Amino acid sequence: MSTVALTFDDGPHPDSTPALLDALTRAGVRATFFVCGEQVVRHPELLRALHEAGMWLGNHSHTHPHLPGLDDHALQRELEVPQQLLHRMTGSYPTLFRPPYCDTDARVRGAAEALGLTEVLCTTDTRDWAGADAESIVRAARDEPPGGVVLMHDHGRQTTVEAVPHLLAAWAERGLRPGPVPPQ
Image (cartoon, rainbow, N blue to C red; front, side, top):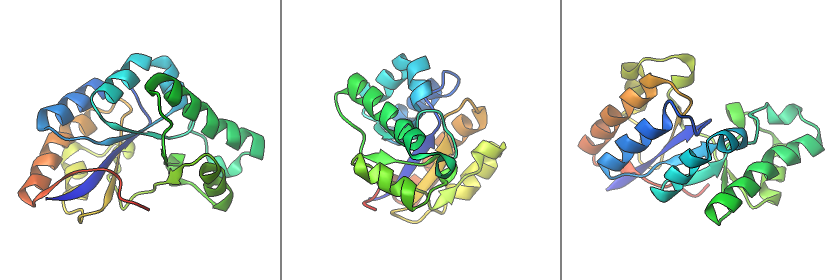
């Protein structure tokens, strides 16, 4: 069976993470959660739940800024703080990084690489962050090709939660299932 990387940015969030985790575990699949350090500090129990369920975890910065506009010191802090938090809580450092807003440049990529992080963007943005309804989210991603990377968000929107089971079913009909982010 071919795979598609299902990814969620911005969490963990108490209004969506438990429901997303429930939908994924009921379906017997894993996804990649690009978490923000501040959210991990606010909701460590949710990060632990993701980790214990076997979800893949990635770095999405500490405070979710536009990284290219930061000075070198601030950029370094934005990447290092989540690395340390995730290591302390899970015992391992993340190896994947998605810049907030997928806003990047050579300096951001270099800072991430210096920490052993591989930058991951996306092939499909479901626009759930812009208030898309569940049907629109599914429509945006249902035809994702094998090896694609689908961007969704874990920041409390119920439409994203509602879309996940329908998207998983649409992919299963095509012989696809969520898998790890493909090598970049």
